[in-house]
Length: 129
Image (cartoon, rainbow, N blue to C red; front, side, top):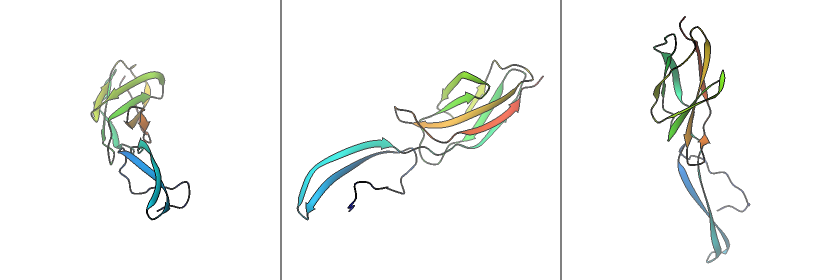
């Protein structure tokens, strides 16, 4: 029971979908109509993001899934704001890179149709010359 018009609910699973039902109660057996709100909790951050198989024009990325749930991952590059790739697995290769350039890759876990994002993880490397 809550006597305020706001509360925090702890202990939920990251990246999970929840529906909350609120009902005003005047007495033990007298209550008003219920209202509900649904949302996803924010996903956790991916873990152990690493680069491997670095060539002159590509870099492979691998990471551990976050705790809880995740629908897919958004991959971005700090050096190219137009680059965006969505994947459903935790291993991918980024191609068409410039030899000898420095790249920072940003991986973010997402859930829900409205793209609720978790905290991003970053890793940086040079491509081979």
